[in-house]
Amino acid sequence: MPRPKVTRAQALAWRLRRQHLLDGAADPVEVVRTLGMLAIFGSDPDLAVRRRLASPGPPGEVQRALDEGRLLRTWARGAVSLMEPATAGRFLVIRAAGRQWARKSWVEFYDLQPDDWPDLREIVRDVVADGPVPPQAVADELARSRRFAHLAPQFAEPNITLLKPFSWQGDIVLGPDLDGPMLLQSPEATRGWRGLPDLDEAGRAAVLDYFAAYGPATRADVHHWLGDGLSAGRSRVERWLDDVTDRLVEIDVDGEKVWHPGDLVDQLLETEPAGRVVMLPGKDAWVFGPGTKHTWVVPPATRQDMTRGAAPIVVDGVVSGTWRVRDDTLHTAWLDEPSATVAKAYDAEVARLSALAGHELTPSG
Image (cartoon, rainbow, N blue to C red; front, side, top):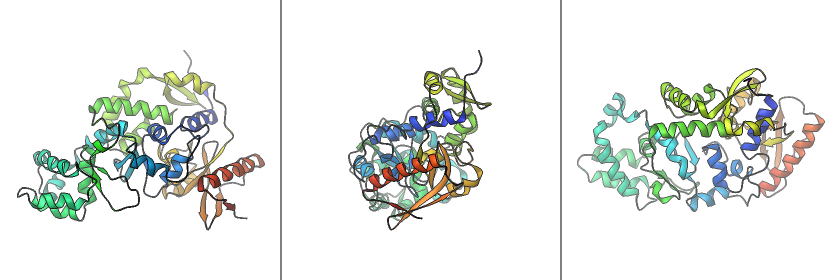
């Protein structure tokens, strides 16, 4: 049977719709669940989510969802990410699989053997159970422990590097306040938290979720998401990919062999290019899901800006410039002079962005 064929423009239009950038989702949880995780530092998660809602509320949508326990924030990739509680465990157990805390350098630096971790984790879980609490609360409890007193200063500082494995193992998440001091709490405080699933079960689900949000995609794209991003290990990712091959269909995108969820192929084939301009915050999932090396989305001339976290102007799915706001003035830098059609779509997006900001933004020039 010949491979189904689509153009790159069709593929990106499907992805735009799938990521709620054309029609909009019903609520923030649906957005975050689809994207898997959103960057917080160096980004604007509230704009990233509200731009994807069919009926966005006033600024603070993400903070409200965090306060209600419908979203959580914790360490998964390098920095803090926003995740949906019901699926967060998948990413965390994948990140924990490398057992970074068992490396010789960790054991020697922290004077902490791998078999010390279960008892240490129990202490930490007990302290944060009534959270959110400051890391100092854990430090105070450890200071009373003869066995782990030497780690109290690491929590008092706090040492983020040491805190991360507790996050990966499902013991802590960060408190809900995006702008306040660092607080720790149990993930049990969030709605829908299901704990850490079996590693291979999580890996297979994460692979399928990636194709469902970022497809059509290659195996290399999945390695970027789970391998480079979560240190899953190449052999694990390959095994998970092999395990779900029967759920995927090989697609021809302008001559390139890629994969797509079998139950979504008809939807892909029926998709037409959207002719849409979208303005997103820096480090948005649209760019960082496939990665800045992915030339479908990030032309080489824009890669440096995207890596640095500039806010992209996306035209039909492709990064075509950057934008920033200063004193209510919208400044843009285009890769190429926009056509009349693109300029009209850009005007519509500026109006949308102004509505999201709650005040009019005036384009420079």
